[in-house]
Image (cartoon, rainbow, N blue to C red; front, side, top):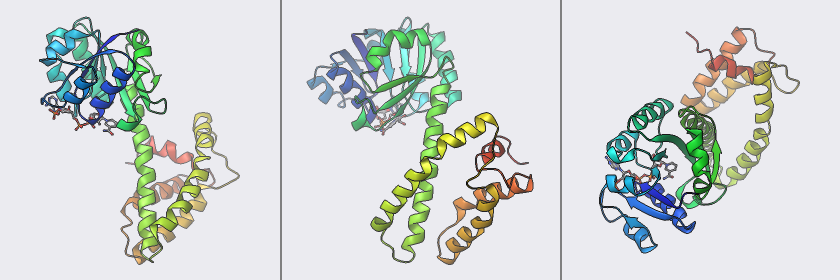
Length: 286
Ligand SMILES: NC(=O)c1ccc[n+]([C@@H]2O[C@H](COP(=O)([O-])OP(=O)(O)OC[C@H]3O[C@@H](n4cnc5c(N)ncnc54)[C@H](OP(=O)(O)O)[C@@H]3O)[C@@H](O)[C@H]2O)c1
């Protein structure tokens, strides 16, 4: 169990991370570029370091949570040797792999992470935090990291945690975009958003039940369906776009989906279930 932990970056998320560690009884050293943000944490028992270097040398486990990766490279200096650096700044798989190389060059071990939570959730089990990278280092600090939320280790490639994080955000933005477009459609006829939202919630919840089946289909390469075919969606889709235009609502986000359905039918997959579309995304047209 790690008793001393350093947190670099005391924005909204970094402060929540430091607070959860304090609540868990750790000795927490904090550092932030601008002075002042450490005060509430110091009042709760944290130690504010004079510099990033002093903060890094204070603890075997260093958690970094800054706005972007480039800032993290800047703040991790010579004192990192022998430390485990856990990078919780949002980034891309490529950035994570480059960061892992940079940290290895400093003589430290590297674990990348992706936070699937907002600050008020930190410290609760429903705050999922994805990790990947140096497994031995992760296991050594697993119990401490569990104070931040549910910890899930994905593998030794440091790029995995940001990849899965981005994939989950991808799914979220798709759902939000669809919901917002649907709201604009019904509002065009003065249907109250508050009346529509519970209907959309119930519908999307029911549709979420199809996700495991899609996953099984794409893993098995078996796209047979007895429920709903690509051809059925392809026939219905122009009506959605046409209605969007008729109601004066921007149909922009629907157009690539229509193109994908058209392509699937043109390639002879009309009788398959919608999971077949995943394989087309994996093989972009042109
Ligand atoms: N907030 C969320 O809901 C949430 C959820 C999941 C993941 N995340 C991720 O967590 C990370 C931090 O988010 P946040 O909400 O805490 O952001 P934030 O409140 O904007 O804080 C940004 C932090 O980065 C520091 N920083 C910016 N530029 C710097 C530089 N050049 N050198 C050193 N430090 C620098 C800031 O220091 P100063 O105070 O000096 O500006 C501050 O500590 C992001 O990658 C974000 O995507 C956030």
